[in-house]
Image (tube, rainbow, N blue to C red; front, top):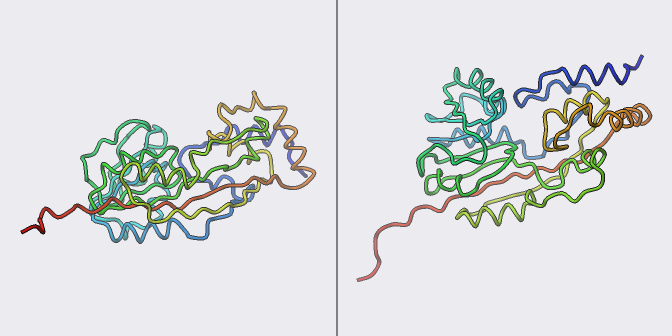
Length: 262
């Protein structure tokens, strides 16, 4: 027997959304993964680094999953949302990672050139100037970004038709990185499928990924939620489209102080 709209919504509204683990959606939603396998690539990059910084680490799950055996001697992670920072501290400190509470939109609390690798998975915002500052000459920024026009179908269901910002467009991000003095190595982009199989999955997702429908609440959008519940009951699924970009940029190596003049 199918569960009622109220039961599904109430369950999702009460569930924890701390951290960046999406296991609550198991069996209720599926997310197509990019072909490159970011976490595996992250582990290899960390293993080759002497000092690394993971920005906006969430609950630390992605970093921890890259394999503590790959961690460099110095590994620092930042997180700005207190519930996530607390969760990341519990997970990462036993693995030798230093967690620093650093709110988004503020300068990074690290010295110039402190890290030879800076990483991030799905940062809410990207400050290329600060990334360039804390990278050592020759250092690398390696990240997976949420690409442009992500979940426009889901957002439009609640907000109506809208034109998404192009700030996440790979060409725009590449231009911003170059303006900060970085050399873009690669930025492939893939569009992927996200499927929701019940309205509870939609509610939980919107509570967690808060930029999809800003100021989302069950009370505000209850009528549209009910209509979406009825659509999923009829068709078995609601499909939205995601975008992911693998972004790699390098800070130019320091020039030699020698002169070739005679």
